[in-house]
Length: 349
Image 1 (cartoon, rainbow, N blue to C red):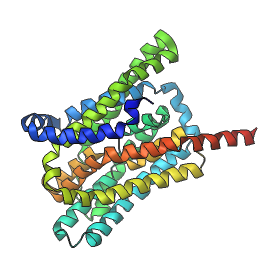
Image 2 (cartoon, rainbow, N blue to C red):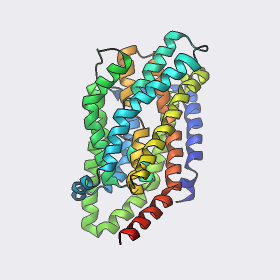
Image 3 (tube, rainbow, N blue to C red):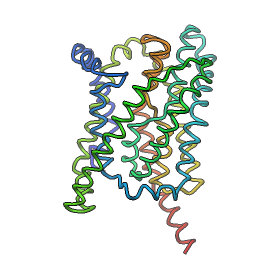
Image 4 (cartoon, helix red, strand yellow):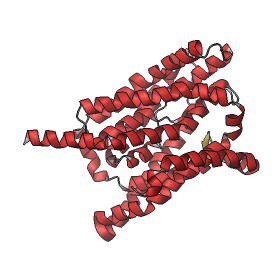
């Protein structure tokens, strides 16, 4: 790992500051970029995420996908954590903090809205950034693709009923444009581009050419991540500066949820003796959120300036620094997984 990547958390912190400052100094530019969207999917952000995800997709070997089923435990953890645990623990934390801990500091109506926003975040597992976190932990790209695809398939069926149950309402209108457009932009398009690029590189120089190309574009991918942070914080700079205490309160249950879910999934993966390149992405998938979908539904149900919409946006702001810290934890514990795998192999022999 180079010096630049070693201090990535520092660059991300600087990108946050630059984003907020740029949003204040260049409001017209950021307003124009913020308006460049469809179905709550911002195309400026989408292009940057696509640039980050595409190099990871080059590592996907479609021929080996059929072997993923030989290791079902990682898929089981993904499904259980994302759909049977995460939405309900997020709702429980929301109730704890906004009905009790913070009840004396905010109006009851706002507390209800913040709780709704947290529920929407908890019920929407991530689609795009997971590939970034998987790559940063040396995850198996083929397995990560299958995990994300499985989550997307379940999300089409389970998102609305879970949200309806937890919110106590029955008229949840799933923004299909947001859901399908995001999956297309963040998974299908970069996957197709990655497969085509891989095919060309394999024809020219085999696996060595593929690995060399991925390493050569890696710095650009990290710069794409930083540019994404600048944009997100530029879009939300006014909100951050005008509601710092509220944002801090909303961030508390999100952060607790993130570390708790990661610890649970990572612990199960350790108990089940999963290899690190499956265990790390497995835990990170359960932690990250599909914030575009959550924001879109919050706006649809409660309005653009609602407390629920604000809570989902805070999820966007918290995501990158929290996920980077979890990536660091996963990387620091890799050797424990590898030593354990080596011990198991010796015992089998």
